[in-house]
Each structure stands twice: as structure tokens, then as C-alpha cells.
Length: 87
Image (cartoon, rainbow, N blue to C red):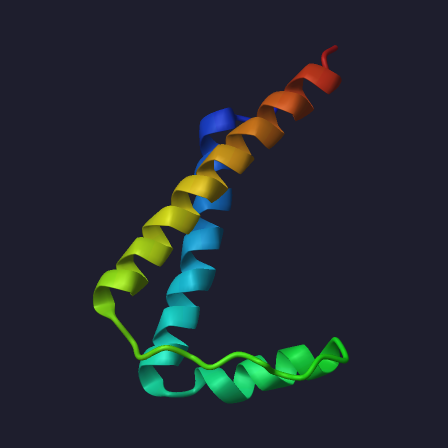
């Protein structure tokens, strides 16, 4: 099965960006720290981190940056997949 590099890249990029948009929303609403403590606790870790104050500029950069990285990783994944599954 051939994957569309562009569609795969958009899906992975959108997913990565959306996950970080949700994280930014949790920080904005003040709900991120309990979630962070819970996730780290599931991995047998204590939380040594302190959350910085919310910044719209940082949140936008985070979402855009993770979308771009996700897009690139999705494109690379689909390209490798297509080369390994030639008919």
C-alpha cells in the first residue's frame, strides 16, 4: 500500500500540533500541573519542574514548531514506507 507523503505529513503534523495546543490550553487554564504530576507519577518519576507563566507567543511558537517537526517526520515516514513496500 502506497502512502501519500503529503497527506501523511499533514496528519502527523496536525496531530503533533493539536496535542501541543491542548497542552497550551491546560497551562492557560491552570490545569497542567496536576496532569504533569499524574503522568510523571505513572512513570515512577517525581516532578522537579515548575511551570512557567502562560504566554500566547510561546504557545503559538510551540504549536507551529511541533506541527512543522511532525510534518517533516510524517513525510520522512511515508517516503521510507513507500520505498520499503515497492511492488
